[in-house]
Image 1 (cartoon, rainbow, N blue to C red):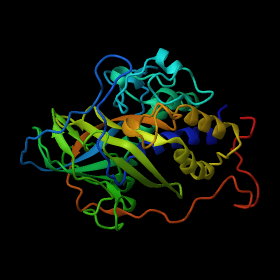
Image 2: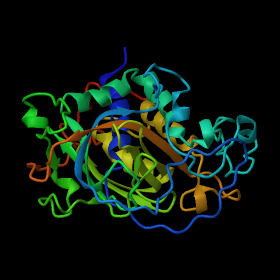
Image 3: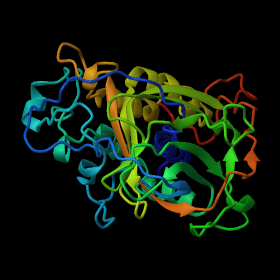
Image 4: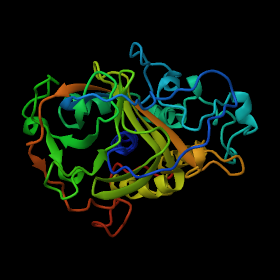
Length: 379
């Protein structure tokens, strides 16, 4: 029987990855011209348009999240579904054969699978979906359903407010993104209707903790092109992640962070980028300890080992690649769908708890008795 802490840990990792794109974009620089080591076209969001249009303010609520376990086309579980989630972050399309010798890419980490650098369709980089989710799925088969279930029952969503929104090409469609919880104070599930309100915006989404106009995560250079809203110019920004989960603060830089979705119906949403594995491990450790997933036990070491050996990119490098360096960042891609929502500019603000959660790995945190469901070093 799988212990409860193991299930919590896997769900927490998946949810952290989803919530992790919710704050403060930074600046970047121009990228070199793209190159490829494999063949075929490169998966990219539509490039910025020069056209202008006048639109309106439109709110959206994410109504489903995909972790790369089910196919985009029909939602059927598929071990290769991850190949269609994300973008070609490094402008290279690496085959399994090229991965063996780290041909044209950063060097594989010692002990990593020989195919760890292999890309998905059209050069897609998504090692979170290819490797990390396989571990999470083995621990919690319904991880994807659990995450979307939290959205469907009104526990959690991401709200997007897009200004100057149009369905035609538009070079300026700036946006703000908010974490929202507890739809209608948990008195009923959302229907995701076009005029529906009722979500509470979490105070941590706001720079001052109280004013919705002051979003921490904003995309002033977002645009609409070829039927997609895109958060900014591809490969030229960094999203600085700052969230609080179970009383533990997390701060991570997300290289080449990008968000996009179809404006006509909110489908084909993508959240993609790359995370430095050392920073990710450092950030996840205190959160894991809140659940009794302690450094040194089998579950913790399995997840950390998978994260480390799944590195396929290089933090801070042009196009996230440098053939002279060992890979130190892991690519990630998540899918979502969104629905038009009502105006949440006057939504209630949910105050986050300021009380830190217990450190279940610290024998001095309570009576000294380890939590009953904490996994042992033997698994």
